[in-house]
Image (cartoon, rainbow, N blue to C red; front, side):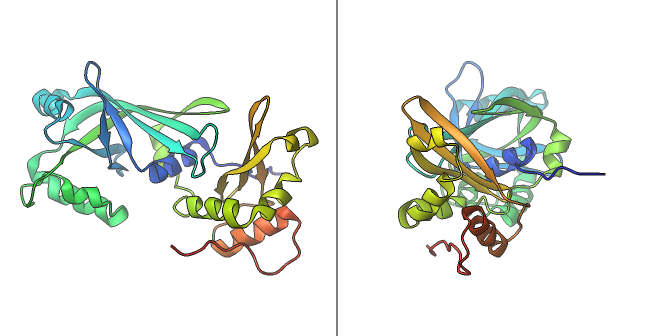
Length: 263
């Protein structure tokens, strides 16, 4: 039986990668101003651990609501790492009920989050054992629905599917690679652009995305923006495989691949 190779991330994989890349997110509750939340971590039980300003209205509403919780939406924006004409690659909306984390559970939950995501903002979360001047309260968002939207449209995904998915193995280094490609390897972009339909080559071609399945290019033309995915022959799992796959996509015979500069 013939099988079809996977050429792009699943919706759940795209959401998990966006969660890793999004440096910040916004937490919204009807009737009040949205609040920035630097921590948004998906837990194994399918809820999100998030932070809200400790003296803010949203934290106060969640505390006052107790076991009833407050209806809330967490919005994450995935920005392209380059200054594109339209920099937003995708938006993720996570709707659910927001609860305050009990004081006795805060320290253990912070430790759990830190093992996977050592976000400096965790040090600013109010904890009974903490010191200093805390800026954030720790909240839990029990998920009702998850939706992602990009240039192709909007799609929802179930919580169990989201938990089964994993972030792209290169999402943490993607920004460095794309910026390096744009600034120091314009020849790579030009060779990839040669794979595009002739009509699209008239616009300005920019690197838009990079994942284990392929490369995305943004063509900024007079008639608008066009996003094109160039898939690898097969998905890759490490830096060596990624470098080789890009060279194959370019039609490059050289042994030495593109290397991102160390920061």
